[in-house]
Figure 1 (tube, rainbow, N blue to C red):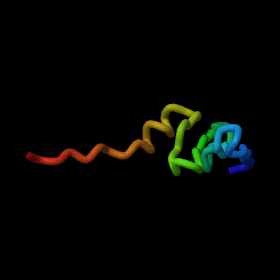
Figure 2: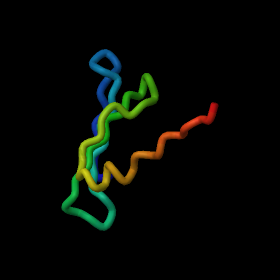
Figure 3: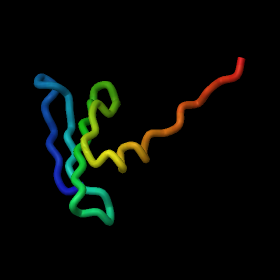
Figure 4: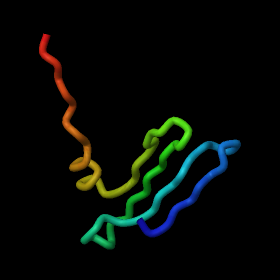
Length: 62
């Protein structure tokens, strides 16, 4: 990460993280995180990286 912004709760309870993919300095990424709900709300970056970081869904057998 190279920079960040913290928004106060009365605006939208969000932290924005800015950076780039390690080893790929030309590929910027931005992550928006809601610190009130403890969840990532948005990720912007190169498709090849985002697709590689999506965990496989666990399927339960009946």
